[in-house]
Amino acid sequence: MALQSTTGKAVIHRKFIYNRFIPITFIAILLLTTSCHRTHNHDVSANSDDSTTSLPVAESIPSEDKAHLDNDSAQIPVANVLPQNDDKIPLEPNPKHIWLAEADDVAQKIASHDNLFEDYSSIKQAKTDKSGMISFIIKQDANRKPVANADFFKLHYSLWNAEGQLLSSTYYSKEGKKLPPKVLSWDDPIPDSLKQYLKTAQAPAHIHVWVPPALSKYELPFYVNGKPIERGLLMYDLYLLDTFSVKMPPAEVPPDAVRLEDGLAWRIVSQGNSNTSIEEADLIQFDYTTWNPLNGKRIFSTLNHREAVFSPSGVPKDWRTILPKLHVGDIAQIWVPKNYIMEGDDPKIQEIAIRKMVVKAPKELANPQNALLSPSGIPYMIIESGIENTQPTANSVVSYHDSEWFCQQELCKSVISTYQREMKTQPLAQASPTHRDMLITMHKGEKRLVWFSNDPNRPGVNTSGILSPHLLELVDFN
Image (cartoon, rainbow, N blue to C red; front, side, top):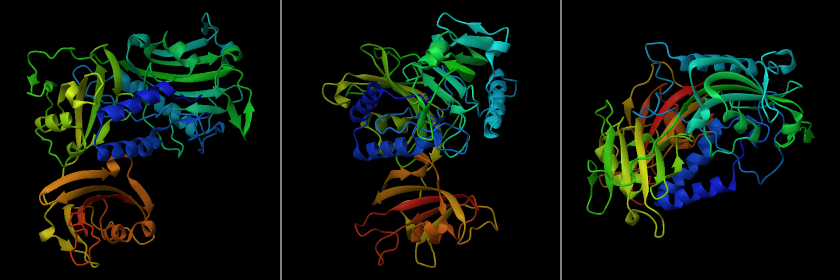
Protein backbone atom coordinates (compact mmCIF):
# COMPACT_ATOMS: atom_id res chain seq x y z
CA MET A 1 0.00 0.00 0.00
CA ALA A 2 2.13 2.83 -1.24
CA LEU A 3 2.15 6.24 0.26
CA GLN A 4 0.81 8.30 -2.61
CA SER A 5 1.69 11.93 -3.20
CA THR A 6 -0.92 14.61 -3.62
CA THR A 7 -1.34 17.56 -5.92
CA GLY A 8 -1.29 19.94 -2.97
CA LYS A 9 2.08 18.68 -1.77
CA ALA A 10 3.53 19.01 -5.24
CA VAL A 11 2.30 22.60 -5.44
CA ILE A 12 3.87 23.44 -2.10
CA HIS A 13 7.16 21.91 -3.11
CA ARG A 14 7.23 23.70 -6.47
CA LYS A 15 6.36 26.99 -4.83
CA PHE A 16 9.15 26.43 -2.33
CA ILE A 17 11.67 25.84 -5.11
CA TYR A 18 10.75 28.90 -7.15
CA ASN A 19 10.27 31.26 -4.25
CA ARG A 20 13.13 30.19 -2.09
CA PHE A 21 15.85 28.81 -4.30
CA ILE A 22 16.24 31.27 -7.10
CA PRO A 23 19.76 30.65 -8.52
CA ILE A 24 19.54 28.48 -11.64
CA THR A 25 22.48 26.31 -10.67
CA PHE A 26 20.95 25.64 -7.28
CA ILE A 27 17.59 24.70 -8.79
CA ALA A 28 19.27 22.33 -11.25
CA ILE A 29 21.17 20.59 -8.44
CA LEU A 30 18.03 20.39 -6.31
CA LEU A 31 16.12 18.72 -9.12
CA LEU A 32 18.95 16.25 -9.69
CA THR A 33 19.09 15.53 -5.98
CA THR A 34 15.34 14.93 -5.82
CA SER A 35 15.07 12.79 -8.93
CA CYS A 36 18.27 10.79 -8.58
CA HIS A 37 18.99 10.29 -4.92
CA ARG A 38 15.48 9.56 -3.79
CA THR A 39 15.40 6.33 -5.71
CA HIS A 40 17.83 5.25 -3.01
CA ASN A 41 15.03 5.33 -0.48
CA HIS A 42 11.81 4.43 -2.27
CA ASP A 43 9.87 1.78 -0.44
CA VAL A 44 9.08 -1.55 -2.06
CA SER A 45 5.47 -0.94 -2.85
CA ALA A 46 2.72 -2.38 -4.94
CA ASN A 47 1.47 1.09 -5.75
CA SER A 48 4.82 2.54 -6.79
CA ASP A 49 6.37 2.51 -10.22
CA ASP A 50 9.63 1.62 -8.45
CA SER A 51 8.36 -1.69 -7.09
CA THR A 52 10.35 -4.06 -9.28
CA THR A 53 12.48 -6.10 -6.90
CA SER A 54 13.61 -9.62 -6.09
CA LEU A 55 11.25 -9.62 -3.14
CA PRO A 56 7.76 -11.19 -3.52
CA VAL A 57 6.00 -7.90 -4.11
CA ALA A 58 2.80 -7.41 -6.05
CA GLU A 59 3.15 -5.55 -9.35
CA SER A 60 2.80 -1.81 -9.52
CA ILE A 61 -0.27 -0.09 -10.87
CA PRO A 62 0.25 0.57 -14.58
CA SER A 63 -0.38 4.28 -14.40
CA GLU A 64 1.67 7.25 -15.55
CA ASP A 65 -0.21 9.96 -13.76
CA LYS A 66 0.38 8.87 -10.17
CA ALA A 67 2.71 10.98 -8.08
CA HIS A 68 4.64 9.09 -5.43
CA LEU A 69 5.93 10.12 -2.07
CA ASP A 70 9.72 10.40 -1.95
CA ASN A 71 10.73 8.10 0.90
CA ASP A 72 13.94 9.86 1.72
CA SER A 73 16.50 8.63 4.13
CA ALA A 74 15.81 11.41 6.60
CA GLN A 75 18.18 11.15 9.53
CA ILE A 76 16.94 12.49 12.84
CA PRO A 77 18.80 15.74 13.55
CA VAL A 78 21.16 16.43 16.41
CA ALA A 79 19.60 19.56 17.86
CA ASN A 80 18.77 20.67 21.36
CA VAL A 81 15.09 20.32 20.46
CA LEU A 82 15.46 17.23 18.29
CA PRO A 83 16.52 13.62 19.01
CA GLN A 84 19.93 12.13 18.36
CA ASN A 85 21.03 10.31 15.20
CA ASP A 86 20.59 6.56 15.38
CA ASP A 87 24.06 5.99 13.98
CA LYS A 88 25.51 7.61 17.09
CA ILE A 89 24.86 4.85 19.60
CA PRO A 90 25.25 6.16 23.17
CA LEU A 91 27.26 4.38 25.84
CA GLU A 92 24.16 3.75 27.94
CA PRO A 93 21.45 1.38 26.63
CA ASN A 94 18.90 3.23 24.54
CA PRO A 95 15.45 1.62 24.04
CA LYS A 96 15.23 3.14 20.55
CA HIS A 97 18.13 1.01 19.35
CA ILE A 98 16.43 -2.12 20.66
CA TRP A 99 13.44 -1.34 18.48
CA LEU A 100 15.69 -0.73 15.48
CA ALA A 101 17.41 -4.07 16.04
CA GLU A 102 14.05 -5.84 16.15
CA ALA A 103 12.98 -4.10 12.96
CA ASP A 104 16.22 -5.32 11.38
CA ASP A 105 15.23 -8.88 12.27
CA VAL A 106 11.95 -8.39 10.42
CA ALA A 107 13.86 -7.04 7.44
CA GLN A 108 15.96 -10.21 7.34
CA LYS A 109 12.81 -12.34 7.34
CA ILE A 110 11.40 -10.31 4.48
CA ALA A 111 14.64 -10.72 2.56
CA SER A 112 14.32 -14.49 3.11
CA HIS A 113 10.77 -14.36 1.66
CA ASP A 114 9.25 -15.45 4.96
CA ASN A 115 5.48 -15.04 5.21
CA LEU A 116 4.83 -12.75 8.17
CA PHE A 117 1.04 -12.74 7.84
CA GLU A 118 -0.69 -13.76 11.06
CA ASP A 119 -4.36 -14.59 11.57
CA TYR A 120 -5.83 -12.34 14.26
CA SER A 121 -8.66 -14.80 15.04
CA SER A 122 -6.25 -16.90 17.11
CA ILE A 123 -5.07 -13.93 19.21
CA LYS A 124 -7.28 -13.36 22.24
CA GLN A 125 -5.67 -9.99 23.03
CA ALA A 126 -6.46 -8.54 19.60
CA LYS A 127 -8.72 -5.50 19.84
CA THR A 128 -11.22 -4.10 17.36
CA ASP A 129 -11.83 -0.36 17.24
CA LYS A 130 -15.03 1.44 16.21
CA SER A 131 -14.06 1.49 12.55
CA GLY A 132 -13.42 -2.25 12.42
CA MET A 133 -9.60 -2.04 12.46
CA ILE A 134 -8.02 -4.84 14.49
CA SER A 135 -4.73 -4.51 16.33
CA PHE A 136 -2.46 -6.46 18.62
CA ILE A 137 0.41 -4.77 20.48
CA ILE A 138 3.26 -7.27 20.47
CA LYS A 139 5.59 -5.08 22.49
CA GLN A 140 5.64 -1.47 23.65
CA ASP A 141 8.09 0.72 25.51
CA ALA A 142 7.38 1.98 29.02
CA ASN A 143 8.29 5.53 27.96
CA ARG A 144 6.04 5.57 24.91
CA LYS A 145 4.48 8.77 23.56
CA PRO A 146 1.26 9.37 21.57
CA VAL A 147 1.99 9.59 17.87
CA ALA A 148 -0.88 12.03 17.38
CA ASN A 149 0.92 14.68 19.48
CA ALA A 150 4.03 14.69 17.28
CA ASP A 151 4.91 16.58 14.10
CA PHE A 152 6.97 13.68 12.77
CA PHE A 153 7.09 9.96 13.42
CA LYS A 154 9.69 7.39 12.51
CA LEU A 155 8.65 3.90 11.49
CA HIS A 156 9.17 0.75 9.48
CA TYR A 157 6.31 -1.34 8.15
CA SER A 158 5.51 -4.20 5.80
CA LEU A 159 2.06 -4.91 4.42
CA TRP A 160 0.85 -8.44 3.74
CA ASN A 161 -2.33 -10.03 2.46
CA ALA A 162 -3.87 -13.26 3.71
CA GLU A 163 -2.19 -15.19 0.88
CA GLY A 164 1.21 -14.26 2.27
CA GLN A 165 2.08 -11.80 -0.49
CA LEU A 166 4.22 -8.82 0.48
CA LEU A 167 2.36 -5.82 -0.94
CA SER A 168 4.44 -2.95 0.41
CA SER A 169 7.52 -2.46 2.56
CA THR A 170 9.73 0.36 3.80
CA TYR A 171 12.68 -1.97 4.40
CA TYR A 172 14.09 -2.31 0.88
CA SER A 173 14.49 -0.27 -2.28
CA LYS A 174 13.52 -1.57 -5.70
CA GLU A 175 17.10 -2.85 -6.09
CA GLY A 176 16.80 -4.83 -2.85
CA LYS A 177 18.97 -2.38 -0.92
CA LYS A 178 18.19 -2.12 2.77
CA LEU A 179 16.73 1.26 3.74
CA PRO A 180 16.75 3.26 6.97
CA PRO A 181 13.46 3.86 8.79
CA LYS A 182 11.00 6.23 7.18
CA VAL A 183 10.23 9.61 8.74
CA LEU A 184 6.74 10.93 8.01
CA SER A 185 4.58 13.89 8.95
CA TRP A 186 0.82 14.13 9.04
CA ASP A 187 0.95 16.15 5.84
CA ASP A 188 2.39 13.19 3.96
CA PRO A 189 -0.11 11.12 1.94
CA ILE A 190 -0.38 8.10 4.22
CA PRO A 191 -2.95 5.38 3.42
CA ASP A 192 -6.19 6.20 5.21
CA SER A 193 -6.31 2.98 7.23
CA LEU A 194 -2.74 3.38 8.48
CA LYS A 195 -3.18 7.07 9.28
CA GLN A 196 -6.35 6.29 11.18
CA TYR A 197 -4.54 3.79 13.36
CA LEU A 198 -1.47 5.96 13.89
CA LYS A 199 -3.64 8.68 15.44
CA THR A 200 -4.46 6.29 18.27
CA ALA A 201 -1.03 4.61 18.58
CA GLN A 202 1.94 5.20 20.86
CA ALA A 203 5.67 4.82 20.15
CA PRO A 204 7.98 2.96 20.50
CA ALA A 205 5.93 -0.17 19.83
CA HIS A 206 5.73 -3.25 17.65
CA ILE A 207 2.18 -3.79 16.47
CA HIS A 208 0.20 -5.94 14.07
CA VAL A 209 -2.69 -4.06 12.50
CA TRP A 210 -5.34 -5.77 10.38
CA VAL A 211 -7.43 -3.92 7.81
CA PRO A 212 -10.66 -5.90 7.20
CA PRO A 213 -12.04 -6.27 3.66
CA ALA A 214 -14.77 -3.73 4.40
CA LEU A 215 -12.07 -1.07 4.82
CA SER A 216 -9.32 -2.37 2.52
CA LYS A 217 -11.65 -2.06 -0.48
CA TYR A 218 -11.25 1.73 -0.19
CA GLU A 219 -7.47 1.51 -0.50
CA LEU A 220 -5.68 1.63 -3.84
CA PRO A 221 -5.75 -1.64 -5.79
CA PHE A 222 -2.86 -4.07 -6.10
CA TYR A 223 -1.82 -5.82 -9.29
CA VAL A 224 -0.21 -9.18 -9.99
CA ASN A 225 0.83 -9.93 -13.58
CA GLY A 226 -1.06 -6.85 -14.67
CA LYS A 227 -4.34 -8.00 -13.12
CA PRO A 228 -5.95 -6.53 -9.99
CA ILE A 229 -6.11 -8.85 -7.02
CA GLU A 230 -8.70 -8.96 -4.29
CA ARG A 231 -7.37 -6.93 -1.41
CA GLY A 232 -9.29 -8.81 1.25
CA LEU A 233 -7.82 -8.89 4.74
CA LEU A 234 -4.54 -6.96 5.01
CA MET A 235 -2.01 -6.90 7.84
CA TYR A 236 0.60 -4.28 8.73
CA ASP A 237 3.64 -5.44 10.63
CA LEU A 238 4.35 -2.03 12.14
CA TYR A 239 7.36 -0.78 14.07
CA LEU A 240 6.76 2.67 15.53
CA LEU A 241 10.30 3.70 16.46
CA ASP A 242 10.11 7.32 17.57
CA THR A 243 8.23 10.61 17.44
CA PHE A 244 9.46 14.19 17.54
CA SER A 245 8.30 17.74 16.89
CA VAL A 246 9.85 21.02 15.81
CA LYS A 247 8.74 24.36 17.17
CA MET A 248 8.63 27.45 15.02
CA PRO A 249 11.01 30.22 16.15
CA PRO A 250 9.41 33.48 17.38
CA ALA A 251 7.48 35.24 14.63
CA GLU A 252 9.18 38.52 15.51
CA VAL A 253 12.94 38.90 15.45
CA PRO A 254 14.15 38.45 19.06
CA PRO A 255 16.49 40.96 20.75
CA ASP A 256 19.44 38.53 20.79
CA ALA A 257 19.38 38.05 17.00
CA VAL A 258 21.87 39.72 14.69
CA ARG A 259 19.96 42.06 12.37
CA LEU A 260 21.53 43.35 9.16
CA GLU A 261 20.70 46.68 7.55
CA ASP A 262 18.70 45.01 4.78
CA GLY A 263 16.41 43.30 7.33
CA LEU A 264 17.94 39.81 7.37
CA ALA A 265 18.28 38.51 10.93
CA TRP A 266 19.73 35.38 12.46
CA ARG A 267 20.93 33.80 15.69
CA ILE A 268 22.70 30.61 16.73
CA VAL A 269 20.50 28.62 19.10
CA SER A 270 22.87 25.67 19.54
CA GLN A 271 26.61 25.55 18.98
CA GLY A 272 28.28 22.39 17.77
CA ASN A 273 31.53 20.94 19.05
CA SER A 274 33.37 21.45 15.78
CA ASN A 275 35.76 24.22 14.79
CA THR A 276 35.26 23.40 11.11
CA SER A 277 34.28 26.60 9.37
CA ILE A 278 32.27 26.72 6.16
CA GLU A 279 33.77 28.22 3.02
CA GLU A 280 32.12 29.05 -0.27
CA ALA A 281 33.44 26.04 -2.23
CA ASP A 282 32.74 23.46 0.51
CA LEU A 283 29.96 20.91 0.26
CA ILE A 284 27.91 20.61 3.45
CA GLN A 285 24.99 18.51 4.61
CA PHE A 286 22.24 20.25 6.56
CA ASP A 287 18.62 19.99 7.65
CA TYR A 288 16.24 22.90 7.56
CA THR A 289 12.60 23.68 8.25
CA THR A 290 10.72 26.68 6.88
CA TRP A 291 7.63 28.34 8.38
CA ASN A 292 5.31 31.16 7.40
CA PRO A 293 5.42 33.54 10.42
CA LEU A 294 2.07 35.10 9.45
CA ASN A 295 0.08 31.91 10.05
CA GLY A 296 2.62 29.68 11.83
CA LYS A 297 2.32 26.91 9.25
CA ARG A 298 5.25 24.75 8.29
CA ILE A 299 6.03 25.17 4.58
CA PHE A 300 8.72 22.56 4.10
CA SER A 301 11.16 20.45 6.06
CA THR A 302 13.96 18.07 5.17
CA LEU A 303 13.20 16.09 8.33
CA ASN A 304 10.66 13.94 6.48
CA HIS A 305 12.55 14.16 3.23
CA ARG A 306 16.27 13.98 2.69
CA GLU A 307 18.76 16.32 4.32
CA ALA A 308 20.10 18.85 1.82
CA VAL A 309 23.66 18.67 0.47
CA PHE A 310 24.78 21.91 -1.14
CA SER A 311 27.63 24.36 -1.41
CA PRO A 312 27.33 27.93 -0.04
CA SER A 313 28.16 29.08 -3.56
CA GLY A 314 24.91 27.59 -4.84
CA VAL A 315 22.36 28.73 -2.26
CA PRO A 316 20.26 31.92 -2.01
CA LYS A 317 21.65 35.23 -0.82
CA ASP A 318 20.45 34.95 2.79
CA TRP A 319 22.13 31.58 3.29
CA ARG A 320 25.28 32.74 1.49
CA THR A 321 25.42 35.57 4.02
CA ILE A 322 24.94 33.41 7.10
CA LEU A 323 26.61 30.05 6.33
CA PRO A 324 30.20 31.43 6.50
CA LYS A 325 29.44 32.56 10.05
CA LEU A 326 28.50 29.01 11.15
CA HIS A 327 30.46 25.88 11.98
CA VAL A 328 29.63 22.23 11.54
CA GLY A 329 27.19 21.21 14.29
CA ASP A 330 25.66 24.68 14.71
CA ILE A 331 21.91 25.25 14.60
CA ALA A 332 20.72 28.70 13.56
CA GLN A 333 17.41 30.45 13.10
CA ILE A 334 16.93 32.87 10.21
CA TRP A 335 14.31 35.57 9.70
CA VAL A 336 14.02 36.20 5.95
CA PRO A 337 12.47 39.59 5.02
CA LYS A 338 10.36 40.18 1.93
CA ASN A 339 13.16 41.90 0.03
CA TYR A 340 14.98 38.54 -0.07
CA ILE A 341 12.15 36.63 -1.71
CA MET A 342 9.94 36.96 -4.77
CA GLU A 343 7.47 39.80 -4.98
CA GLY A 344 4.10 38.93 -3.48
CA ASP A 345 5.42 36.18 -1.24
CA ASP A 346 5.25 36.20 2.54
CA PRO A 347 8.34 36.46 4.75
CA LYS A 348 9.82 33.21 6.04
CA ILE A 349 11.44 31.86 9.17
CA GLN A 350 13.90 29.01 8.96
CA GLU A 351 15.84 26.78 11.29
CA ILE A 352 18.97 25.30 9.75
CA ALA A 353 21.19 22.65 11.32
CA ILE A 354 24.64 21.98 9.84
CA ARG A 355 25.09 18.20 10.05
CA LYS A 356 28.51 17.56 8.57
CA MET A 357 31.16 18.64 6.12
CA VAL A 358 30.65 16.35 3.13
CA VAL A 359 33.55 17.69 1.07
CA LYS A 360 36.07 20.24 2.32
CA ALA A 361 37.21 21.98 -0.84
CA PRO A 362 40.95 21.39 -1.37
CA LYS A 363 43.03 24.57 -1.26
CA GLU A 364 44.65 23.58 -4.55
CA LEU A 365 41.39 23.75 -6.56
CA ALA A 366 42.50 26.71 -8.67
CA ASN A 367 46.22 25.89 -8.67
CA PRO A 368 47.14 22.85 -10.78
CA GLN A 369 50.68 24.12 -11.34
CA ASN A 370 52.23 21.59 -8.94
CA ALA A 371 50.08 18.68 -10.09
CA LEU A 372 51.37 15.39 -11.40
CA LEU A 373 50.51 14.30 -14.94
CA SER A 374 48.88 11.03 -15.89
CA PRO A 375 50.23 9.07 -18.90
CA SER A 376 47.61 10.81 -21.04
CA GLY A 377 48.58 14.23 -19.70
CA ILE A 378 45.76 14.84 -17.17
CA PRO A 379 46.91 16.91 -14.15
CA TYR A 380 46.09 15.35 -10.78
CA MET A 381 47.01 15.54 -7.11
CA ILE A 382 46.52 12.86 -4.44
CA ILE A 383 44.57 14.44 -1.57
CA GLU A 384 44.20 11.28 0.52
CA SER A 385 46.02 7.99 -0.03
CA GLY A 386 44.12 4.73 -0.36
CA ILE A 387 44.91 1.13 0.55
CA GLU A 388 48.03 -0.20 -1.11
CA ASN A 389 47.75 -3.01 -3.67
CA THR A 390 44.02 -2.40 -4.16
CA GLN A 391 43.65 -1.11 -7.71
CA PRO A 392 40.83 -1.96 -10.12
CA THR A 393 41.42 -3.65 -13.46
CA ALA A 394 39.98 -2.86 -16.86
CA ASN A 395 37.21 -5.40 -16.18
CA SER A 396 36.28 -4.06 -12.72
CA VAL A 397 32.99 -2.53 -11.70
CA VAL A 398 33.89 0.62 -9.77
CA SER A 399 31.95 2.68 -7.22
CA TYR A 400 33.15 6.24 -6.82
CA HIS A 401 32.17 9.76 -5.85
CA ASP A 402 32.76 12.69 -8.19
CA SER A 403 32.53 16.34 -7.11
CA GLU A 404 33.02 19.15 -9.62
CA TRP A 405 33.87 22.84 -9.32
CA PHE A 406 34.25 25.73 -11.76
CA CYS A 407 37.12 28.11 -11.05
CA GLN A 408 37.83 31.50 -12.54
CA GLN A 409 41.04 33.07 -11.28
CA GLU A 410 41.02 32.17 -7.55
CA LEU A 411 37.22 31.95 -7.16
CA CYS A 412 35.79 28.42 -7.20
CA LYS A 413 32.15 27.40 -7.07
CA SER A 414 30.83 23.91 -6.46
CA VAL A 415 28.63 22.78 -9.33
CA ILE A 416 27.47 19.23 -8.71
CA SER A 417 28.47 16.18 -6.73
CA THR A 418 27.41 12.55 -6.45
CA TYR A 419 27.22 13.16 -2.69
CA GLN A 420 23.98 14.97 -3.47
CA ARG A 421 22.51 11.81 -4.96
CA GLU A 422 24.34 8.47 -4.87
CA MET A 423 27.84 7.38 -5.67
CA LYS A 424 28.30 6.21 -9.23
CA THR A 425 28.67 2.48 -9.85
CA GLN A 426 29.52 1.28 -13.34
CA PRO A 427 31.88 -1.00 -15.28
CA LEU A 428 35.16 0.82 -15.60
CA ALA A 429 35.04 0.20 -19.34
CA GLN A 430 31.87 2.35 -19.51
CA ALA A 431 33.36 5.33 -17.69
CA SER A 432 34.45 8.35 -19.71
CA PRO A 433 38.02 8.09 -21.04
CA THR A 434 39.26 10.77 -18.62
CA HIS A 435 37.60 9.14 -15.60
CA ARG A 436 38.82 5.72 -16.68
CA ASP A 437 42.36 7.07 -17.02
CA MET A 438 42.25 8.20 -13.38
CA LEU A 439 40.25 5.44 -11.71
CA ILE A 440 42.31 2.55 -13.04
CA THR A 441 45.42 3.99 -11.35
CA MET A 442 43.72 4.81 -8.02
CA HIS A 443 43.71 2.71 -4.85
CA LYS A 444 40.60 1.84 -2.86
CA GLY A 445 39.75 4.74 -0.54
CA GLU A 446 41.96 7.20 -2.41
CA LYS A 447 40.83 10.78 -3.02
CA ARG A 448 42.34 12.49 -6.01
CA LEU A 449 41.97 16.04 -7.27
CA VAL A 450 41.85 16.01 -11.07
CA TRP A 451 41.74 18.83 -13.59
CA PHE A 452 39.87 17.58 -16.63
CA SER A 453 40.28 19.55 -19.85
CA ASN A 454 38.92 19.96 -23.33
CA ASP A 455 41.86 22.09 -24.44
CA PRO A 456 44.84 19.90 -25.49
CA ASN A 457 47.18 22.90 -25.36
CA ARG A 458 46.42 23.80 -21.74
CA PRO A 459 46.08 20.75 -19.44
CA GLY A 460 43.31 21.15 -16.87
CA VAL A 461 41.79 24.22 -18.53
CA ASN A 462 38.64 24.29 -20.64
CA THR A 463 38.58 26.19 -23.92
CA SER A 464 36.64 28.92 -22.14
CA GLY A 465 39.59 29.43 -19.78
CA ILE A 466 37.66 28.08 -16.80
CA LEU A 467 39.29 25.47 -14.58
CA SER A 468 37.13 22.40 -14.01
CA PRO A 469 38.63 20.48 -11.07
CA HIS A 470 37.05 17.21 -9.92
CA LEU A 471 37.54 15.40 -6.64
CA LEU A 472 37.34 11.65 -7.23
CA GLU A 473 37.01 9.15 -4.41
CA LEU A 474 37.33 5.45 -5.28
CA VAL A 475 35.02 3.83 -2.76
CA ASP A 476 35.05 0.22 -3.92
CA PHE A 477 35.44 -2.10 -6.91
CA ASN A 478 34.95 -5.74 -7.80
